Image 1 (cartoon, rainbow, N blue to C red):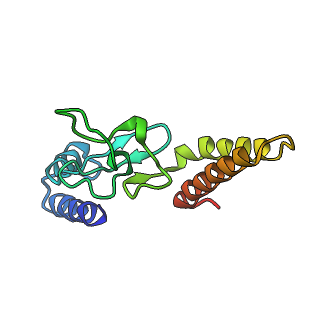
Image 2: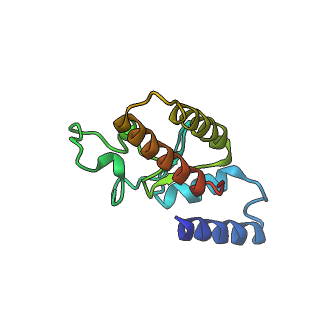
Length: 137
């Protein structure tokens, strides 16, 4: 994805240098990105960059029964902390931080059975991985 964005940036700079595009001309950048065949889905918990033509690493599709004709990720199976296609952006941080605080508070309850504590511990680890992806620790 970085190489695709770098190529788009170089092409946009060349177009600006030749006078064919002005800085900030969103139509030019949109057109260039469209030709790279990148797919970004903007979500509440993360952004997804799943490549429909090569979905390697997509946790949502792992061991899934994909409905006939469906293209793209299976949103209900999204695992932002574990998927290489997932991007945690700054606007997602408050949600992940609130989830971490909530799980940590729940984990501290003394009456929880051991199996429930283990499940919460796994959820906390997943949230911490997502926060690490976003540059938060």
